Length: 487
Ligand SMILES: Cc1cc2nc3c(=O)[nH]c(=O)nc-3n(C[C@H](O)[C@H](O)[C@H](O)COP(=O)(O)O)c2cc1C
Image 1: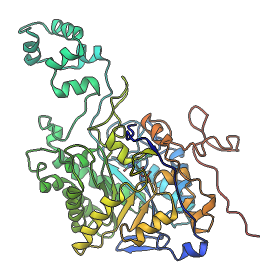
Image 2: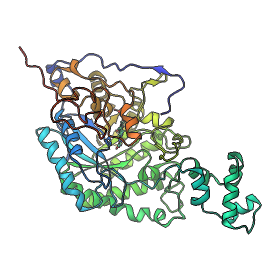
Image 3: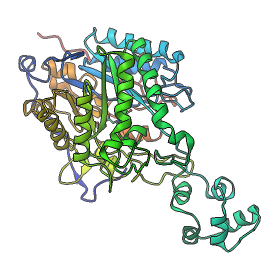
Image 4: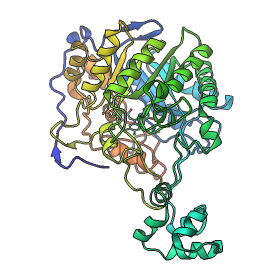
């Protein structure tokens, strides 16, 4: 992962913890009632992919155990990991693109209800993504994958030459010479792996995204309701299709790009189609970026425009993230795909404890608060979920008390200790395992390995009945926490 050059080491500083009595009077542990969007507390576990699905996208017992473990800590809400809306192979990521995925998802819903005593709401994040290839062996790319055209032949001075001869010549070229022959996309294909973009208008399936996606999202939303989820989070963030429509680099010329209105058009059309399908009494919100954090990308003013448009359209909540783009991702090793959290924008999304003067805690607060204030200025009360580096009670309570957030997201902190909520609420904040923001979890995510936390994955490995990672070295969920009985 990219790190700021300042390399300033930050330590988490959760501050002091409240007594149970103070917590009971807090905003953080107070309910939120906004139409169908109702939470028992204003605490939120944002979507995190744990890499536990089967290779064809079905729920496993490990998925069920994972969410049940989070639910045992009783956050106000959990958002189930990014779940694909299409019925196409996409590796071990959960899917909801067909009815056959519903029974497995239902089991997660039931497990969360049971483990939280019905207290925790469960939303599902639904996602569309475009195809991305692994970084190829140069010999394969130049010798096989690259589509040869007359442009290549002309650049090589080989007009009319046979394909095999042109490829043989390409394979001999030094990297600098290749730069004179291949265009920018081809060089990217060689160095990073080919990646589709929403602006690839020459590809029919990309041109047709605005016609296809509303129904795909709506079908997924209908299935989510059928499976018993309390609502839906449309994934409009990070490096994926819908965020790419919102992006300032979207220059589609079909009315779905270029201007702010054009870029937000498809996200609004998707939302409306979903709303028509699930009805007004079902929770539908979205996650989007307060800032893309890439050169030439959408900034906080663009995001403010989108936030107001989503709120006006009737979304039930807005959850803000930042960065996490392919545009500035690091070159992957041969055989691996680019990972959108490896560049400066990735740093903004999941900031590491080695940081700059700003530090890794609360980097998303200012931009999110700005967007929220603009929504309020329009007379709209849409709840805003703010996430990023939150690990302490005072920090979270202050976000609510200062009117900068309505709900507080704890992603890596809840992974480090899913009992954060129960512990803090019951006056046992001192027992919290505080996240150290070393991004061990994120490194596992990058390798597509089962995500765990170094604070607990090798503790009590001999505990009876626990499930472990495929290599048998790590436990898949933290040990249960039993509140000490008072004397
Ligand atoms: C292992 C891992 C997987 C993640 N997967 C998702 C995801 O599926 N969807 C999403 O919107 N964000 C995802 N995120 C980002 C988090 O939801 C969150 O925005 C980010 O970690 C910053 O919050 P934090 O500082 O509280 O961890 C993931 C983060 C981690 C660490």
